[in-house]
Structures are given as C-alpha cells and as structure tokens.
Image (cartoon, rainbow, N blue to C red; front, side, top):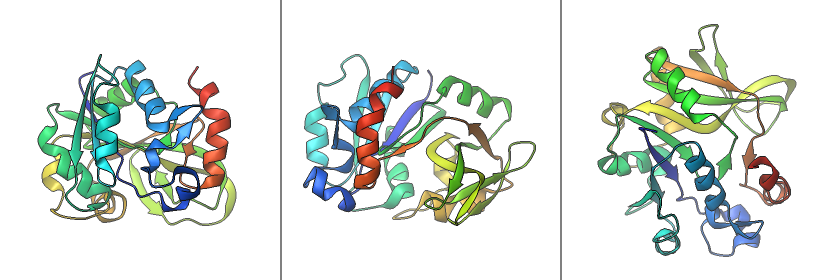
Length: 233
C-alpha cells in the first residue's frame, strides 16, 4: 500500500500503571506480547510497509524492542523532544513521511478495518482527510461525530449519555500530505485544535460496523486481553 502509517505511541498511560508499571501504554502485554505488536501485524496484513512510531515517554524502550522486530517492513522512530499532543506528534514526524497519502492512528486502539477500502474512499471523494467512525449503540464514554448523506463530517459532539446509535472516532485517519502544512508548530491536539476547523474543507468519514478496542483503562484492557486474539484471526 502506497501510504505511510503514523502510530501515536507517546501516551503516559497513567490509568494503566497498575498493569504496565512504567512501560509505555502501547507496550501493555495482551496474550503474551505488546498490544502494539498486534496492531503492527494487522497493519502489515492490510498492506502497510512503512510504519513510523511517534514516541515520547520511554521512547528508548520502544526503539530497542522494534529495532529488529519486523524486518520485512520498515519501522522508524519519531521521538518528541517534549510532549507535543496528538497533533504535534504527527507534525513532528512529518519529515520522515515519504508518501502523498498518510494514515494516522492511535497506538492504543484497535478496530478491524479494510484500510485499502478506506484509502479508495478517501481518493474517490477527493478528500483532504477521512476519519473512521465506529458504530456504537449507546455511549457515555466518547465524543461522537455527525456525518451528512455525502459522508461529510459536519459536527463533533462532546460525550453525552445516550442509548441511540452513534458513531465515535476510531482514532484512524487517512489524510493528504498537504495537511502537515496546515498544522501549527508545537503542542496541539489533532482532535480538538485542528479537526473542528477542517469541517467543510474536504473532511469526510467512513462508517465502520466493527468492534472498537481502547486499552486506556484497566477495565478496557482486561476486555482486550480476552477478545483481541479472536478479532485478529
């Protein structure tokens, strides 16, 4: 697949310290190996050949683990000199990106997704950025996204309690390389500081009806340990 993959791996994972100790959150072990290993293997099966790990906290442990881990693909490190937020981490890694189309992912989340199909949808709509939205029934933990009949994203809503069908961000984005030039310097959130300003400027969504795993809390991590393996088969 002719797209580089940026994986956000710099989270401190303070809520998972009882599980991970001082290791980066993405290195939490699920069924005997780091969560990030599962994610990278899945991306390889989807056609990824060049992956850039956006690291900060304990970056040296990530570098040591992945130096010779996946020799059949290229795994690079982009290390933040200081915490830069989700958007700043992508901007910091932009000099390493070679492809015109880029995937950006949260390294502590997983959703089974057809990445070539998402790339095709992005290209066919002439989008600047495309976000994967996961269908959920009932929601109180995540903000939601609103799309019109053309799949354009028209609104982001803060988290609220509901039993209705909603779409939440899977933390998976496909975007054109030119988006880097629209990103500010320094620390910023891609979700809160950049995305709202892109509404109406070629910002689309793809609807995904699939499980969503976020290992951000001990409860979600325990669920991931029991279910992730079967999702990757």
